[in-house]
Image (cartoon, rainbow, N blue to C red):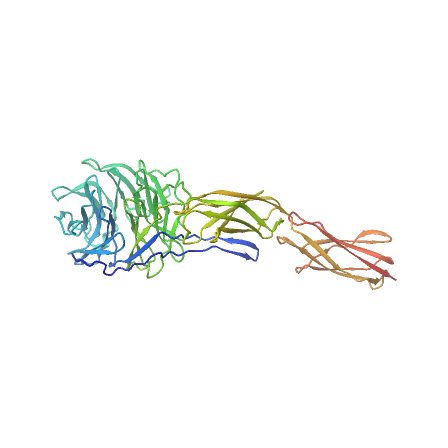
Length: 583
């Protein structure tokens, strides 16, 4: 065992990538571009881990310690390493072993750390970090998963002679006995089975996808007695083999009534523990481009952390209310580059028992470097409210033209580190339309930009869903009468023309608002001393211009009237020109 307090750890606070709203006039009209919001946590401290592979993370809340295991399975003689940190991200010590290590589990009071070793189950005193008497177990070359439930440590025991067999080998579920020997539980299946302990002496086992398990399972056991009793089990593929589980992580809720599963194929599954049926209300989908990698509930029952593998500005970590019915916007963390890692490692999330800290292990794209993030969610939420109602401009809204709806969001408590967002919808005769999000400025004001496309009443609803620092606000609405856009016709005609040379008139047609689906066709009438008659219609050119050529039939004043009847979104227009006609 080596003691090296603080060595090799780097600390940094507040690194979150924020994606801000951009509202712009596009060629076809006004649009609001919405993107995932990133909010700042109270603290985000990062330590670079001294490991090149990762197998397990566990948190000792009794002594405020975090243990991270380096599996190091590549070669028989590879030494094992467990990095130990305190809750502020400082490295306390490093435990090394003669052979590789894998799973980690703490006993009920946190006094003993159980470690999956190659030849047995290693044990360490969590106060002195000195080794205790090891437990016997079958030899392992694949890596174990450990969990402490019902007063004893359970571990997986893969039966493989070569590392190439590990993904599909038969794996047993064993447990340690008081005399430091091990006993088969009677449960086994193929692949790198994963274990998770939960409240009420529950134990969960999940099966990652592998060639011998086309339809992997999740199962829950009662570990309170001498015999491990399965109380629920589920496979997920349908009759055609679609929808099979791609397990990356699993977790019990704080009260044990629910199970969350990080499924790389389906996202976050929320299940009822009693029978592993789908919960009535699930969690929102992860952002597009994210693949679920880890999941963890806070011990106080308030939060759910969801880790993901994502690139670019797509969030890798979302911190949400544990209640799936709570629509509060999550805290979103983007990890990108040498200061953070690029994604959350599978099974890389654990909470302190009181929910005051989340510990997240991230890795780079190559999977050979690792970071430990210590995240402290805000402890207090503040009230918010919309004040002064909503206003709009211009005063007369017309279909197909830009409209700005403005309001103000008032916040209690300290100012947010990153701008908040409000969401908006428009409800008209065609239904309800999502308008995206708008940024709240430092003074609380915001502007929702829209382009209504129907005449009649348009009702705007603006919402603030809250975040982990601010409670949601009561929605505010505003109804705007939307009228037709104006059209106009302008004519240029000679003051005098002759019957022999004819009349040549040019004109311009303009229709504001939404572009016409086809070029306008104008009606032309001529009125002279012999009466009124209709001439041939003219079609407006792409640039809005048109010409009228006519041979008058009589002398004296002749009036030309050009008109367009309008359509569903535009008013009609009329223009006249009078020409003195000579012989």
